[in-house]
Each structure stands twice: as C-alpha cells, then as structure tokens.
Image (tube, rainbow, N blue to C red; front, side):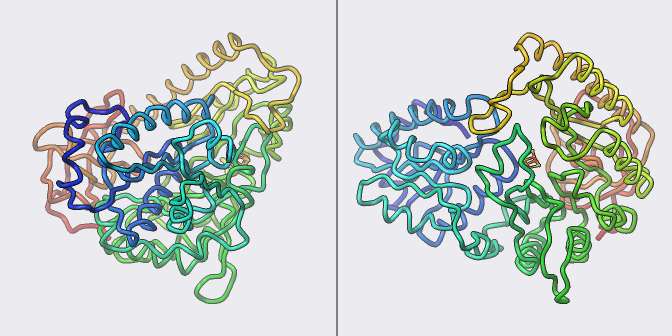
Length: 475
Ligand code: SF4
C-alpha cells in the first residue's frame, strides 16, 4: 500500500463515484508493530457495519486512516509528511466532487492528540489505540466539520466492545493470523513510550480469545500468533472459573481443531513463569521460537533502563527454557548507545550475545522518545559512537543468524505452507523457527504442515524437499 498517487488513478478519480455505485471505502495504512496490523483489521471490522469496504487504493478511499507507530525516530514528523500527501489527495478528490475524511489512529495519535488537528487541518479525527471501537460514533461527531480528538484511556475496556472477528472477514487473512490478547505495559522501561501510549496492562477475557481463535481456525488459519506488548503477563478467568496464565490459555488454544501452531510475542523475561516454560516442554503446538528481548548485556545499563532483571538472570532463564525445550531458538531486541553506555557496557552486551547465541534479533541505536525518562538522562552517547557500536553488534548477530540457518541443512522438520513460492511449482512456508522455506510442491498443500528435508540455505530462505507430499495433514 502506498500513499503516492498513481497518475492514471488520478485521471480516473472523477469517474470513481459512478464505478463504485456509492459504496463507501476505507483505506487503512498501518505503521510499526504486529499489534497495529491486528488493530487495522479490527478497525475494518468495526467500520464494516457502517457500510465501509476496505480498499487497497488510497485514491478510492472516502475514509483514510493512518494507524501510526511511535517507536521509530521522528515518528511524528513522518506522519505529518504522510498527511501532507493526503491533504493533496483530499483536494483532488474534492475537485472531482468526492469527500475524503482523514483520521489518525495509533500511538502517534495518542502522543500528539490535538496538535495533529492544529498542524494539519485536513485531518478530521484523531483516535488513540484504546478507542478505535468508538470509530463509528467518532466519525459521526466529526461530520459536523469540527475536528474530534479521542485519546482518553476509557474506563470501559475496548476489548469488551469489539465483537469477535466474523468468519467472512477473516477468510482473506491467510494461514497465519495475529490475535491480540493483551495490551499496555506496567514495566516503564525508561526508553519506551508504550506505557504512555497504550496505557496500563489489560488482558482480554479468555472466552473472547478462544471464540476468536475458533473463528480464525474455521476460516482456515493454522497458526496463531498471540500479541501483547507484554504478552506473557496475560492473565484471565478461564472456562473452569480458575485464573489462567498464558501457559494455560496457549494450551487451550492448541486444542482448537485446525490450530497447528501457537506463537506469542512480545515477552518480558520477568514474566516467563515456570508454567509457561513447562508448556514449551509439554505441548508441541507451542513453537520452539521465543522473542525474549534483553536490550543490553550490561547490568549497569539494564538498571538505568529499569528492566528489573540483570544479565545473569537472563542467562539463567534461557538455560531453564532450553532445559525444557532443547531445540528452542531465541530472538531479542537490542538498544545500543543508551545514555551512559560505555565501551565496557557495550562489550558486556556482545559477551551476552556470544553466551546465548541468537537465531535472529532486532537492533537499534538508542533515540530519545519525548516524555520518557531516558530522554532527559545525562550522558547521551554521541551518534558516531552509537553507529559504530550498532555496526559491530549487527555483524555478530548476523553471523549467528547465518550459523543458525546453516545448521538446518540436512535436518528434517515440519513446514507449514502459507502461499505460492517465488517460482512456478514452488510453495513457501515457515519452519518452526520462523524461517522462510521454499520447496517444489503442489498448491494443494497450502494450509498444511508437511515434513521437509532442508537441502540448501540462501540469504533469507531455506530450500528443501518434501518427504511426504501425500501424507495426512497434521492437525
Ligand atoms: S516491557 Fe516492553 S513495552 Fe513495557 S515498557 Fe519495557 S520495552 Fe516498553
């Protein structure tokens, strides 16, 4: 999806009203994390009863929603730049007799609020991530022409107001689907905006999660990725009236017919309970791949980040997880150049990476987020130092990623096929460790898991051969 207008589409715009027969269209562009991708789908669900069909052509949209992310550097400026393009589109559509409403949602909406209306008059609605269930009502209020801002953290839980996804709207969502089960965070890491933009930790009720998972499975989804900013803090009353943890919920979801694989992200090390570790031992549907951010290997920096654990605790935790599930692979986030980070602190991070061995990782230079404690800390690290450390860190992480991928050559494991491959006759899927895998095979296997022997490894994919193309679908 792009906001850059196709010149032909511009020319056609005047005819669009007749072609669409008056149906209203919504274009939603999501930035950032998987939760925003999920939220965008649910916004479309909320708007469907209002007569909005989703479109992938921004030129056709009567309503454009930018679902924003505040994690990256200069996030707000990038949103204002996108809004400038949308204002031009709004003017062009107006000249063709078509109205266009522009809404800003997500974490930049939460952080900037009314400032967005002040700086970009084309915007009619600003809605925070906790409030998108109110979109129909907010859009009606915005019809008066006065800009509407809703960035309150409502007393009512948004999850109570959003019906489970409907089968007819989930069918196009593929073999692997996100399912938000938890939102917000109480940890207050000093670099992070999430506690301010997504609010306190809330867990979605178990019954609603199970229902939505059943609907997704009925629609052909075979892999569920449970989402939450602090997903392993999820807790809720289960079907038996007892308080369930994520471990219990995941094992219940794995019993749903059709569900082959369960993943969850993002986890905080301090919330990796013994029962969740044990679930990895007991339930093969829990995939042996865990995104478990550590951020730094220096105890001094971890304390300054308010991570509430030290490097030794992380190493010990990984040892316990590996004892339960020896083939588990780890992924992590790293921030280099946090305020006060010395060369020694950075070396501690490299040491921790060598000790653990990561299959993949996301790594960033620290950049201050307005309103977070880290932004006001003394001893900000100079940009060239951050850049040099990040480059060294990424060399090590990339070598580990490649080693991990190469170690799969000659191994045999299940691949869940999701789509056609790059070339005719190929199908593509994912290994248990989230690696992309390509094989020669029939499209009929899309949606099934099959044994594959890995024969070669490319920069970003594994290649293999099907061992039992005609075998029973695993379920
Ligand atoms: S645990 Fe994650 S989401 Fe929560 S404050 Fe820390 S980095 Fe942000």
